[in-house]
Image (cartoon, rainbow, N blue to C red; front, top):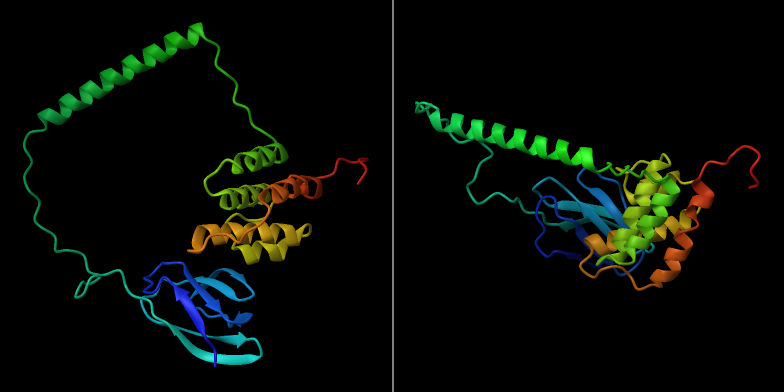
Length: 232
């Protein structure tokens, strides 16, 4: 017999549904849902269809079918996906007031532009600093330590850096990890801890955050392009 718990208890369309099994599990792929993240005995899924999801797969050494997760619609009872009936257009009064507003807005815009132009003649415009991907990543990692959700911020910094290095930002954690050529285990651990902190009601698993920050700071050594003649 297969046992599993899911949260929230009454999920609706679009919710991230966390499912915990008593043993490591592999779910069968299904068009009825998408996998947001997974660990051996924990899976986070999501669906946009307002109907129960029938899960199947293998838990431990046992194959199971039709493990049902109910999913409710966000529509109220009796509410239909139909537009409200159109009302005939009403005749508008002469647009005097809108013209006054437009004139005031134009005057304010001109005044603001003149002030900005006048100040720009007295003060030099500060240059916009664009950091290289590795420098931006290290700055984002340092900032993550001060974030209320440290693991999520560290995972976001890692995703953004990998996107700059050609690994898509719109992919799921599993899809990104499958395409990585270097440091796959470290990056998978960081991204999944970030997923837990974002989507799981229990937050991220405990871990030495400072140690992960030190290890993450070395990722550019593996992913930055080598200069010709540079030692590996």
